[in-house]
Length: 155
Image 1 (tube, rainbow, N blue to C red):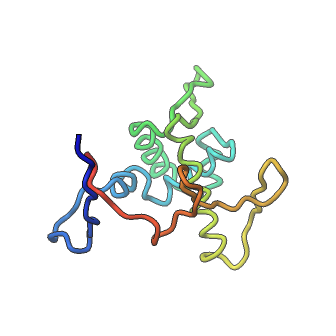
Image 2: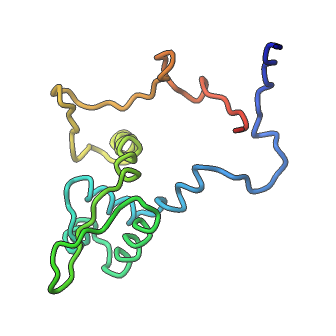
Image 3: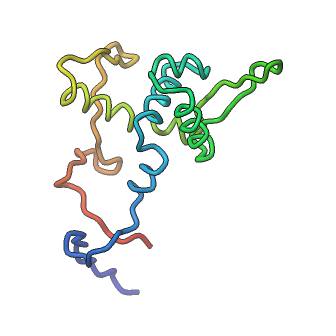
């Protein structure tokens, strides 16, 4: 058995020019539109009915309906029937939608710092303290920053 040779660092800035495959681009294809993210915000706040989501986001009904259909097709939310006559649905997170929570929280935290004069909400942890999103390596416990992460091609 031979020891694995260390891989040279992948320098994406030196790659040949061209559109590259990217999980971020794929995620933005599903989520990267204002009304989609605001609808997800409302569902996260416990607002599940179409009219209330529209009222809290300010989205037009046709745009909101389109975004909710796309989020459902992507498996981020699911519709649940709450009235048969007339047929009415509520919108709830799937597992994929629930897993967006850290990303949404990080975006909100960034917005609190860089996009508004003063935050509208303070988000508190169950311990009673304000939530501060910090990314740490699950293996070593050290902070994850641009300087501590490098890329390697996936197998």
